[in-house]
Amino acid sequence: MKNTRIATLVLFAAMFIAAAGCTISSNSSQAQPGTTPPTQTTNAAVPTVPGIQETIKNAGAVLLDESFSMRSGYQTVYKKYALEDFGYLYLYPGDTLKISVTANKPVNVLVIGKTDEIKFDSIEPVWDTALKQDQWDYSPLVPAFSQSNVEKKEMTFSIEDKSTYFLIIDPRFSSSLAGWKGSNHDDVFGTVRLTKI
Image 1 (cartoon, one colour):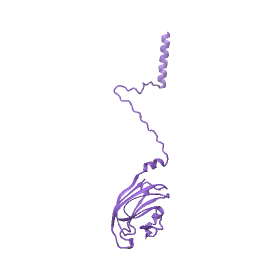
Image 2 (image 1 turned 180 degrees about the vertical axis):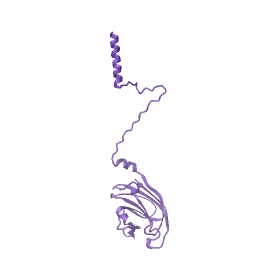
Image 3 (image 1 turned 90 degrees about the vertical axis):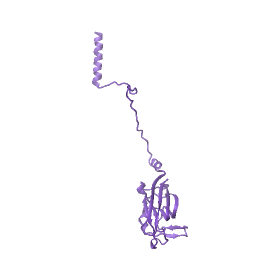
Image 4 (image 1 turned 45 degrees about the vertical axis):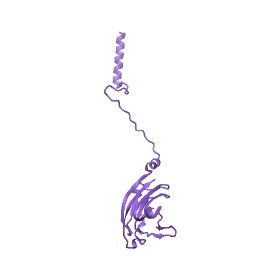
């Protein structure tokens, strides 16, 4: 009778466990013969700090690397590259850029802000040897960077004011100081490379 009670209790316990939906499984770290143990992968979240990861990611990023071909001596013929097209709606104080230009004729290289870009066509630069030796003066424009008569040069500069910027390759005065008021027109071709350091 004692054995019958034990058997009844065991049977009752087994039914209770089955009704509760509990299952007992073996240790998953032991692989069954002929099977491959599952691998465990984790997707650890990498904390981000605004501005720092982007700066590291973009350091040394080549934004532009292409050839250009234009005719000199026309008022509206120049190359204009919006840095916004390369993912930089704004550049901030301290941002540093490197511009490398190689051209068969001397070109003027400028980086200008949005306000100056709107009026660039209407400004006639003046050849200035008094204030800046061998330099075209684009006043009243105030370029963030300006270099005249570039044929082969690598130039580096830092931004001082937050703005939307444009890189200009200007061949309008490559053939003559008269620019678009003269009659000289030459093919101007070369390469330009822009890197954010």
